[in-house]
Image 1: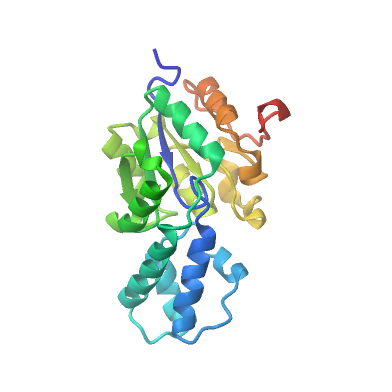
Image 2 (image 1 turned 180 degrees about the horizontal axis):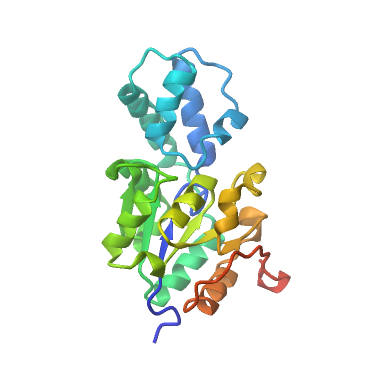
Length: 245
């Protein structure tokens, strides 16, 4: 019998399963440069971590007074990102371990991301994570992106799981807010250090303040096993040294 009977796990993709934010930044920098915006920095990019591509380019259009339509900006950025994603996306090793541990227990899993369906497919295929992650929801397929709960609720629906039985892994404050709004527990692994104390992360069942450098697949799996039958309470945690690689 599975140690995690009745639990489903939903992963954010970018910055959670894979280290794709550098690719998103470069795609954004190239896109904006093509329209004359040449001073887009990593700090500028960080404000969009956790926000869907559609919402990002809509904000760009207003912020930078771009003449192109939102649809044109979306298509341009997505094309540039896909070129990078297919050749240079790295899955976090400990996240891969976690996915494999869950798969061995038969835990239903899904990916719920603000990326386009094409981008999600390219990344999962390129990293080999598609071997275990078959249920995928893009924010393009729902009415509202994160911090609204739509993408997580749709993932739960496709898994046939009650929201209260789902645990979300997220790296961004809007995603943590979306998980909370969906009535799901959250393991938060902040990507942007400055966001660690964001109020959205205070709702997480497990908050790894050090981000990916503190995450281990085994420690997360063990935490999930201990709390598989309880609602849990917000916890700030660093895995014990013995659990780290």
